[in-house]
Each structure stands twice: as C-alpha cells, then as structure tokens.
Length: 488
Image 1 (cartoon, rainbow, N blue to C red):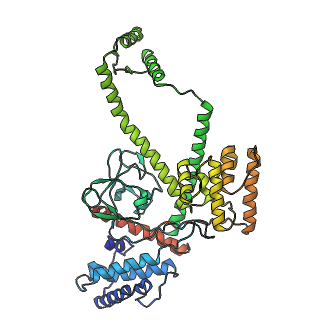
Image 2 (tube, rainbow, N blue to C red):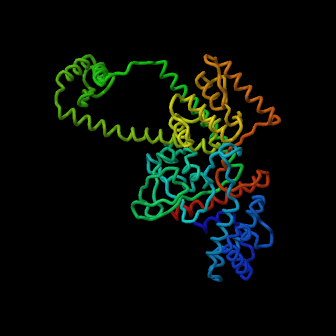
Image 3 (cartoon, one colour):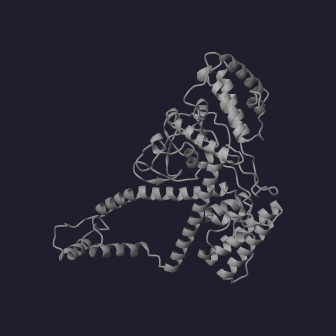
C-alpha cells in the first residue's frame, strides 16, 4: 500500500527523463537520513531545506520529486534498497505533515489532548465495505466518491447511500470485511487508528488513512456542524411532541385486544393470534362476521406459536436495522463533537448518551439533568483553561428564536451562563446574544473558533495555491482507488 500512496499523488501521465545514477544516490541519502531518525533531512536530500514549519506545498513538492526517483517500480532493478528507501520517504512525509496536537480548551491551559489523526499507513489497507441491505461493495471507482470518503465513513463522520439499492447507512450499520481473508468482521470507529486482529485468519492489519487538505477539511467541518445542529433540533422537537401526546401506555393484553378489534373491522389482513387471512373473494358484507367467528374459534396453540415465531423472525431484521441506525447516529454525534474540538461550548449538540460519556471522560459527575451536566462540564473546562467560555460561530445555535426554553437553558449552561429561574425565551436569547457581542468586541469583531482538532493529514495555511493542490491531490487519489480495492 505504500507504493500505491505515491502512485496516486498526481503523477504525470508522461514520464520524465529518468537518471538511474541520480536515483541511486538519492536513495542512499534518504536511507542515511532515515537511520538518523531525521525526517527533515530525508525530504531535504535534493538540496532544498524542508522542515515541519515549511509550507505544505514545499513539503509536498519535495516528496513528489523524490517519489518519482525512488519508486520501486523504477529503481527496484537497479538498487537493492529501493523499497526500504521509498518507505522511509513516505514515513518522513507523513511525519512532517502530521497536524500539531491541540488541547481541548482551544489552546488555552491544560485541556485534554485530542488524539492526532495523522499517522503512518504501514500495514494498513482500504478494507472492503458492503451495503447492509444488498451486500453491494461500497466506494467502487464508478461510484463517483473520492478515496478520502473512506476515511470519513470509517471515522463515523458521514453516512452514505448505496448506489445499488439507495439504502442509506453509516459505519455501524455497514458490513466490514478483513482485507486478508475477506471474512466479515466487527468494527467500531475507535479502532480506525489501531491495528486489528482478524478472528478468522489471525491476520493483523490497519485501516488506511487518506489525508485531505485544509479546504476539504473546512468544508467537512461546516457540513458536520450544520447536520448536528439540525439533528439536535429534530431530537428536541420529537421529545416535545411525545410530551404533548401523553398517551397512556397500553398493557400487552390491551394491545392484543386492540389488534383483534382492528382485524374484525377489516383494518388488518391477518388474525393477530394465528395469522389466518380471510378469503378476499368472500362478500364484503359477511367479512366482519367471518372474522369475528374466526376469533371465537381461534384456540389452536400450535398455530398461534408458529405465527408468533414467524412474526418475530420477520421483525428481527427491522429491529436490527433500527438499532444499527441508532448506533450510527450516536457514533456520528461523538465523531462530530471530536472534530469540532470537544469543547464544552458545543456540548449542547451531544445526545444524552454522549453527554454522559463526555462527563465521565473528564471526571465530571453525571448525576442530575442535562442542564446541570452541561454546567459542570463548562465549569471543568473553564478551570482547566483558566478562562471563561465564549460563544463562537461553531458553538452558537443556527436560530435561537426557533429553540425551546429547555434548549436555550442548555445552551446557556454550556457557555457557563446561569440564567435566572423562570426566565423566558426572550430573556435567555438576550443573555446569549450579550455573551456573543462581548466576545466579538474582545476579539476585534471576529469570532474565535478555538479548540478545533485537525482532521486528516495534510496541512498548510490554506492559501489559494495550496487549495489548487488539494484538488490535484484528490484527483490523483481517485486514480488509485481501484488498486486499493484490489489490494484489499
């Protein structure tokens, strides 16, 4: 897979003039620098100084130039250490382009250190992923997806739609396979940066990480933030509707009698006891009497047990799909919060389950209601960072006026604000807007979006030249997607 890493880096279709003597000299210099554990020296062997502080465009240009010289397909027959030199070059490039580790408090204080998301792809594969409904292979070259979409799916950052059956699925509901023996494996996004042991073939492998540039990363962060805000609104709206309905919970006997009554009225086709379906060719006038007569005589215990087994077998896949969809949402919620920096200000976007997990990770008490947990989480972060929470563009809700009072109180708690008891929506909105305006004035009119974790490899300062290179890089990666799939 390391050889494919350079092949898809945007090689030109026409080969340039190749100098074997120069290539061997560069390979020896790369190996010497690698033995000294000097990644900067590896990328500087051509005479241009390259360091971890160099622009990404400079790092990438040096890497591509050396990759064309040292590729094992060209140098392998002329120099015995060609593969080792090429691997050393790849490791050096990945080391220098790894994003800096930030703390969870936005760079202020001793916050929790997020796990860096750039690492080596040694012994890593693009594993095969299949649709859970039709078992079609996901992410094939004709699907139109870029190779880095694999990293997005495997980290739980996005859901995708199957090209064959149009079923939407995420990382938890997808079917994953070992790249060595193609056996079905269990997978969780927490394993993405680790080596995994296959229970079928005892093989050990990792999951390939496709780096992306700052432009793609920024677009993903904006998409994830917008989606999580919309989902939080939907969860609150559903909870409000359920609270308003306040329907009494039916017992099992009551549900059974209700199902029998619906059957007699012709609103369901099959008897809820044994599955008997009346003859549709019978007269409509006698249909109710026939159904009622059937229920009076429906006492065959064996037939009823057989029908219950059939119904349970039919419902099992639907229940499993519903559980997988719920797991997808929880995983995406946790991944989105990590992508946004794992700050207390954005914790109001978390589900109740993920909020408890976040509190537990930081040693915060998980007792009490949602507002109390958010307040304790904000206080813990403020104590670590030595500064009060601020409202940023990412932590601010899209539309404060569309939120309920409990939602607004939760947002206030996440930003370290203590609203008065009995405060209405207008008072809460004014309190949040005053915090937003005060921070904007402090920052000179700009919003600070601190605490963002770098996503996937790459780097740079985001200028136009580097954005163009991001597009070239994505295009080059697309050429190697088919080869990645074959190697899996």
